[in-house]
Image: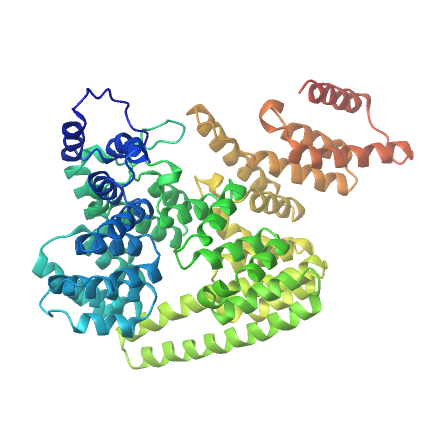
Length: 610
């Protein structure tokens, strides 16, 4: 929680101070003041009740449940404590305990409340039949029941019907941020990002206008901002949910910088206060810069009672992506129950095959082949459905089938690339090209397919063909080349040079140099190695071809200035070329001019000082 302000409480003024803090919604300070008092008076009804309420308002449901549990034991006839205990357990993700606690409520006036709670618990456990049974016993005109039924329809996949129910609920209850969020979520699921973004924007604008104290957008990187904590006010604004959904949409559209910006614009909270969805997204969006921290967050989440359903699958996929196959195998073995709950059969088979690539590549290839055949068959059926819908001029059906095709393609691409990777690691590039071309019928417009096709053509010295795939990727980012992977730019420049298109290569490098200078002139602290890597690759190429004079000169140029470009990775590739040159000189297979020796020695002296 946020650090509480220390207060001097005069004797006899504790009660007035606490109620004043509750009036001002300063629940963190209430907890700070009353926790020592509870140590002194552990059976105090007033202390437990005030602490339980404050913890609940701070969304610290685990501690709230502990307080209400003690109250239930001390005062077993008070049903309001039983209800608060069950609600806290439900919010904390302890569904079994919440269900048991709800059964202790005997007051007939709380019967509907109990049924709602039990329906919620069953909903979170994906037991929709039991949830509906509970809701059927509640008054049908209750707007909360309407919302709960809409949530069940959403989870069952009836997105359109769920959306209509949410709209109906908003008509009855008026504007509610959480209803607007659910409507945005429905649009997101239907890939109607424009309409979803309109709901999200309205939620954020209302939150900023009505609650400036939540400091939306103040969490600038590098500047420490005071946490606003987890309050009931924050929960009611649905700001956290809205920003997470905005980030998810940007991520789906491959606008990674915008996704990170959305997470960063949330009301500021310290890491310990982050909800599971925000923690998951923070780990995912910063995995490229901080994989260790990302893995730590995801492992922490899967040990909690509840977490986003994508967490377990994403952890395994990221372990495979970063080639931590042993860790992926360990997680699968340690969490067998989660494998059945959160992994589809296809994903489980994919992870299993990927893990096998290190120990049994032939068996892995066999499994990938089975998976690939299954995916291709499904894609062909979807293609047929799209064609039929177009012939029938059914626009809605075309949109629906195209959406399903895109989802199926996104599931197929990782399988295709993992299978290709096995042959790539064996340096069997012709087979990699063959595998990719066989899937071109479905994947030829996908950026990942085009990128990997360019790479495999480059490795076979098919430079003209490689340019055909590299160029559109680079041209798409004209004026923003720093968003392109450095190796793509380097390979494109090498392909230009090897196909006698030196002017095009120089143009790319000039544009890259200008962009780096512009960013640096604006005082940005981030370091960019794009031009450095391009020059390193070109220099290495010339050294490999035997032109050490030009190659070493290009490599030396790539590390200028040394204080910004010299590092373990860049030095690793630099020294390989220098050692290769030294070996050629020692074998009297290479003669360098004195000016080259002077340049190299000056460079090494400069490196030594760094």
